[in-house]
Image (tube, rainbow, N blue to C red; front, side):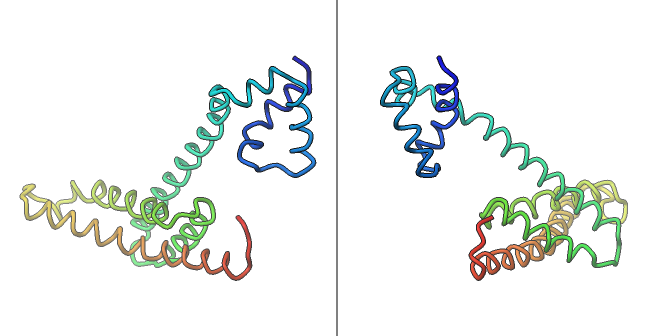
Length: 173
């Protein structure tokens, strides 16, 4: 196996997705015409294993965004009456949309961690829960939902800004 084979093996996933420039496509096709090993690799199922590092990277970024969302949730609960979380969640929603290009992911990442944090933060608070009745637990869940909804609205406003920015500037993030 030559050095050229190693290069073509690295390029095959992008070649199959038609994500290469014309000169690179020509290079890969010329090599495939002359190399039986790479031709077999290009048509085999073994090629799908090359996508694993990218999936791990995406999973890593999912975790980063979820951790950031938890940090924003904790930060906004510690700030009391200050409203700086409005700006931070709008920026967070904007960045999340630029990264994922999916409004449902923005919704999920901005609401679920806040909902969970609101429950964790108040489950042992004697002002909210005294005897763990269904009424108190229901009120806790409704309150956590309300807090998550407020944070999510600001994240969705940020995502809307990202959508408009992409649409009017034709920027591909």
